[in-house]
Image 1 (cartoon, one colour):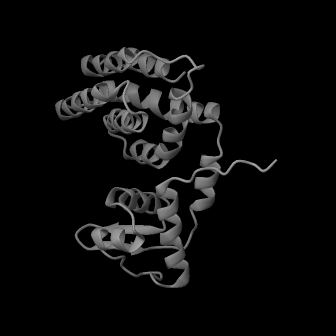
Image 2 (cartoon, one colour):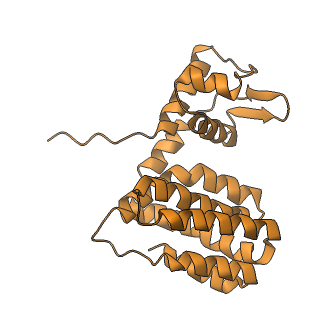
Image 3 (tube, one colour):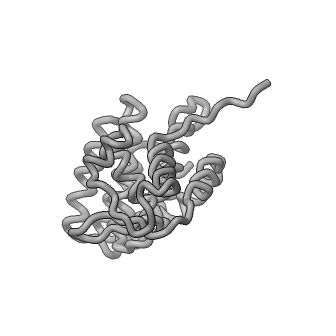
Length: 215
């Protein structure tokens, strides 16, 4: 019996298309990539998808974003092998890795968050709450935004970039866990408990609420 074909994300496809053009010499080492709108049109993808692919390639060292100048090809290291390893991880493995990042980030966020962080967290949570129980893709998109805001509130750029790099695996894991009627689901109110703990600066409660969300 043939094995099922694994659905590839649009970001994976964008990564591959950019890599092919680098390997073929369209954008050689040191070359500046086209501006984002032109790059999106060239690849036939949305600007959001292209932006995320560029972010991944920048984090992996293939591209370099020069503020006010553009995005340049920096190296020819291939991040696709890493992406494939992440994509093949089990739900349990992804949850373990997510917990390592998120739980500690929640603790740090409670200690370091600013008033601007709290406002951003509130807005992201309300956007997620409106979509809870609705279309799965839309809810997951906004749930990830909320959790990214939590990680960003730790004010550790390494944690923030790691989480962004890992976000596609988290998305796939959420699709499998939230979409599984036989799997117990955490209460959405845990998100509010997490935000409340961060807002009042209770690091232990924030870590506990985030841990409870990762079932």
